[in-house]
Length: 445
Image 1 (cartoon, rainbow, N blue to C red):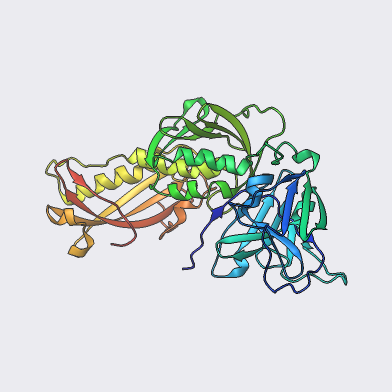
Image 2 (tube, rainbow, N blue to C red):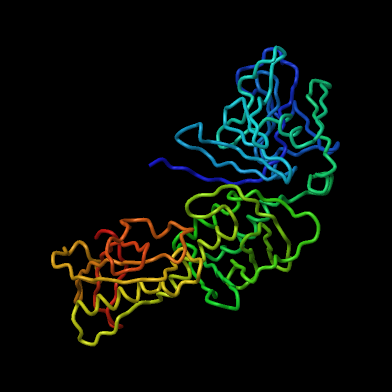
């Protein structure tokens, strides 16, 4: 399987600067920050931490990816590296403009239109004019991006140094680093809140529904289900920006809160809205989580993205610490009681959950051919058995395909409502001091 590492960062001054050709320039970037002086509205930029700007062989200026998060506060996303170079991309956006660039490509997509990043005097695309990697750093071209976002770029060569000043567009002046004012981009703010929420490796999720029906608050470890995935990919899954003007909560009786167990950091969202209310320590502020991607798991909205996480916490809470009391009953009865409680929790899931069902029926059988290797160690030390079962179910909603994973198929029988599906599972049960337990089921031993 190809591994893909997702790295998320804020992005800013990516500017492809049309500098004159340097005599004797090498095929790789050859200069450092002593030869290039970059200022924003006349204030020098400090590159000592993020790495120096460089010039390409064609005399174009590139800056480290982190330059954007530190100084211009555009939102940006670098999905990282893939076994296939063509899959590595860099995204940038503010509230008006979005740019997508592939590593080592001379073209970019600006608001959906493909454009050439830079051209020669003869009108031909300039090779190696797009983003590239140098060790662990991603370098991005300056003038092209900066001008695409409406900033001005002024250049002069003086005393052997290449001097570049960025003149900030009026709509960006409140967010750009000028003098003592250092901005914090919207994506970075979102990351700060999520990092604070998951800092103790435990998360509280609270769904408020219309008239208080179902929903509720659940506390889960971060490593349960898809918790790490939801938290780690949170920043890069949306086009973050700051809202314009004052914000009020949407007129919806449903909302979802993800927060630290002590409530000091939280994120609240609503169905059908990209507004996100954040709390960090004593500060409350608003962000806009613009839709970036939609897939079979969530529709691209922040509510759906976090609801995915909540649904796992809820079904875990509904199933609880499932133990069947030992009353001398037979294996068949024990297994049937366990499966009915475990799968029956889907009937109690909040409407809209990826687990919510309107019909569930289970058929259980004892597996007489189980092997010792199929059991956890604690089961072998006590009375134990293996069981198989099939669950016939009808989904409460068809928006999610979550229950279609595994060996799910259309149910052909006539003893279930129309649209019923069926899947098969198996697992071990053993007797503990509290009663009969099963540590998990699956499609195989």
